[in-house]
Length: 103
Image (cartoon, rainbow, N blue to C red; front, top):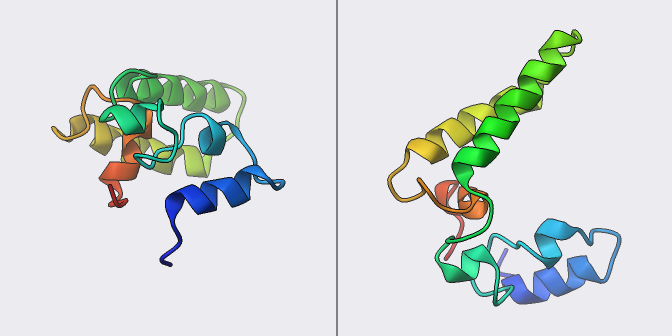
């Protein structure tokens, strides 16, 4: 909506929306100077590892009779992110790039 990403993060981080992704690992390049997003999505927790953990969580849920509907959708997205040459091998926050976020 035209908000400056840094101003938006500041608003979120001074309210009840404050959380690790907005304060430490913001997926928008330039918002957090040392975040993976600000380093071309290098370093951090790899998209492949995120995808593996997501699949393990879905499997664990299924073993106790839970169907995580949003988890299945997230898995489909991370499968596509991991296969995308512009995202493969990057920090998992690169999903922002994949879904068309402004860089």
